[in-house]
Amino acid sequence: MRWLLPFLLIASWAPAQDTLPLLERFVTPEEASADLAALEDWMLATHPAGLTSDSLILQGAIRRASNQLKAGASAWMFARVVGEAMATWGDSHTGLDWRKLLPEMEATWGRFPGQITLEGGRISVAQSRVIPPGTPIDSIGGWSARAVLENARGMLSSEGFVRQTHYRRAERLWPWVAAVPAPGSPSGILVVRNDSVKWAVRATAETRSPKRRDVGISVDFTASPAALRIASFNRGDDDRFRRVLRRSLRRIRRRSPEGVVLDLRGNSGGSFSRMERLVQGFLLEPDPLMDRIEFRASEVAGKAFAPDFALASPRTRARWAASDRWAAWRIEVDTLAPGTVWEGALRPIPPTKRPYRGTVAVLVDGGTASTAAHFVVWASNQERMQTFGEPALTGNSGTCAHAVSWTLPASGLPVQCAAMRVWVNRTAGWNAGTWMPNEIAPRAEAEAAARSWLLTQ
Image 1: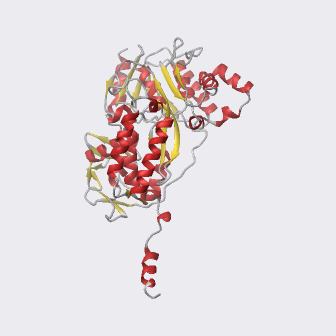
Image 2 (image 1 turned 180 degrees about the horizontal axis):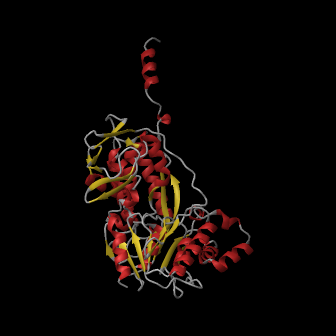
Image 3 (image 1 turned 30 degrees about the vertical axis):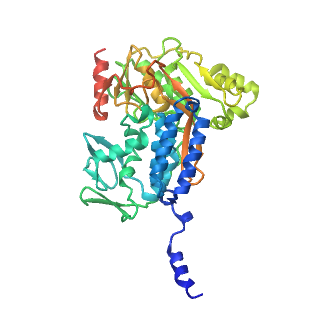
């Protein structure tokens, strides 16, 4: 029995797999293959593209991913492979569930200090308690700014078939894509700019519950044209969002500014109904906003809906449907047999009684996604509206919506898949090219360009 003692001592020193943070756990080749096979089956059963020839693209990506993991990998490296494979279906709602992964990353490696922007191939810090604002950073963990950008693009730029440089959406994430230490390398400190600035990893992530009164809307009349900022279509209480938006638009109409700068940079979307309330504030006549919707009915797709509709009485549902076109659509799709695909357009959106009739310049960037991207694609085709900034997270015709969440059974990684496809402009080349704003401008110059245009109208 003496020979067991050294073995038991060594085993006691080795960290248990279950006690490690999720992203530091090791995924065996067998677990990776099982997860990828399960992921393929789930996506084919969930995404509308699973019924088309597009499914061959996914199947090829899964096969390539399996070949990359013959020796296993850390869960973090496996996440990168999974994200790249899922990105082949080219929509912003199919991929790793970063909302769940970000707290895990920050709890494991610490919160990256401050808001990060990348201009001209260099990284600069806008706000940080550790690094003075405006400090240029030439590298993160030895990676150049360009390498950081390219790595992040492979992780996040799924929309437009991985052809877009949407690093803005990865503002909290993309530094880690390059900065996370490789397996076997020393960990504990990230070094920035020739050892002049350091901060410890493994810091506890800050968790703050969002304030229900903060709906992400602000209006500024410091200069004319006025500026209306919509940070999200999913923040705070729904009724308060509508009240604050209605009050903000009323203030703009009363002041009669020389146009409005509508800032949707960093707005990753949210509720369709909230976005449509914003559309109504600028509409002059009814508009369907979207040309076509493709939805695949299934039990898993139904679970992605908010439960309030399913729990409501038929009378309440009918009352909602009278004022909300999505509620009317929901009544229709809830009666479909599993596997049925609903295709068509919703009824037009009516304008408000007193819409804003002036010119509007919309600011966008790579963080403008989902329902916010629907708005900017629509706005770019309106006569009295122009879009300025960097490409939003969408293709020429729109983007997907209605994401379904799942967890890979072996690795525990959270993923999500679109159960709906939406086109604002369904054209012959809907899957070709990247949506571009009317005038391309770096983030720091977009607002000035928008104001100059408004003052010439």
